[in-house]
Image (cartoon, rainbow, N blue to C red; front, side, top):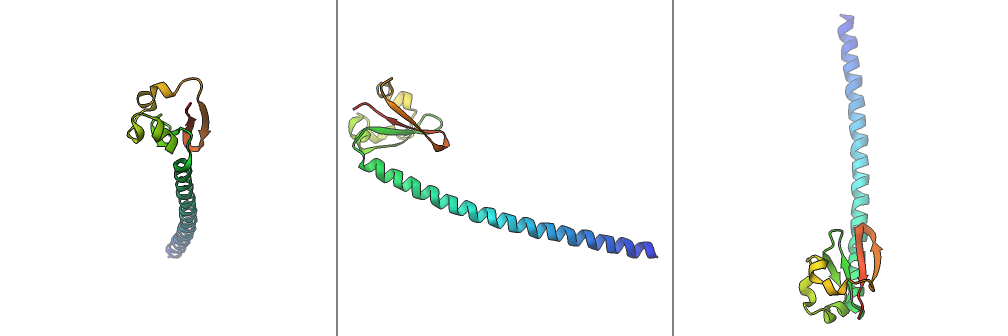
Length: 120
């Protein structure tokens, strides 16, 4: 009979330990979600800033994503390129073949994006 009580006490201890670990994991998850929310707000703010700056920039410049597609463009690029904003989302090599020569300036951006300043 004593063995049954010991087993019950051991099971209760295991259950209490599992609950404590679950509570700790839930707390960790809440902290990670809060941090993710903060980072998402920062990214959205930076994206809005870049959009505004590109809108003010008269120099022809485009942002290429990691796949080499045109993700954004400056007002100058919109005015200079024959197809204007129609190149957004298209592969740069097909949308801007003449504009991607050797004399362009490329700046690596976070997230494997690239800012390409085109020759006017």
